[in-house]
Length: 432
Image (tube, rainbow, N blue to C red; front, side, top):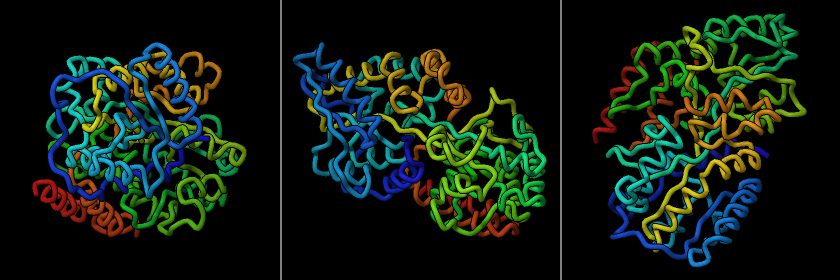
């Protein structure tokens, strides 16, 4: 069972509205980190629990004085709500193996996360060696790391082979490299009535829906540029305007629906055969198996960037080390142990989710040989990018989505002026 995209995104969204009753931006450990027993929380996902229990058992067998006690995240509205309350109460676990990058700014502002860069002398070198250039996308505005990149689920473009065949398109090697390619395919799909829509991303007013339509394609088209960089909105660049124009054309041509789907809005349209294509991570396999005969290709771009240079959305979950932890040295050592090549390979084998490693293809070699479907996702891990780590993310994404509803979903409107205004609003929000 793969991770549900709905759970991932809603959990991230919930993180953005946590009560910020505490102050500060994390700490550097409160003195020299010590060793001793620690506790950790992991996801309620059954496969992740199996991985965590095996990893903890292996550690405990060799560290009798530094035992790790592990349990699933306590129930609540969301993981982030539970953790936010625990930070306020001062009873967080030492480590959370389910930290949404979008939650880090809130946790950090509450004073809940340890500044890893300044607390552990080898933190920067370990994280950089394991995750490569991806690490910089997880830095906080102060340039420090308050989270350890752990696992990622790169987005790709799924397509329905039967629908493509019915529309007279190549079902084995479809031409979907550029925006024009996708628009041309969409036109054939509609005219042939092979499927009702070409693409059907979530169309409700929920601002997190941008993670399923604009943002993945924008990351691909812009070389991995996040929505906000250096405290400025970036989507008014040429790459951003190209992506916005593409989506406006999709809605103008009736190739995408501006109406909310009546079933599962994330996987339903593609799984039900209503849409010919879908933007999803490797978890899509579990959603679509037995329902659709599908293939996957890299996300399209305006000029057809080669696959080996195409960025994508990471949909990551990371590890946070909390300031209330009594024995931070053990917490850090266990973190490194849990992210060894052996344990990272086990994570992939047990969960189908990729460790955020620059050498993931080598570490996962045996698994990929037996499961070739995942190869393009593995190749994309080093180029997967997440949401920007900024305070006030909720308002930023809401502002963007409002502009989207005004000038993209209707299939008409002045994209340039609408998003220029949105960019200025976002710049002002960040400045405040």
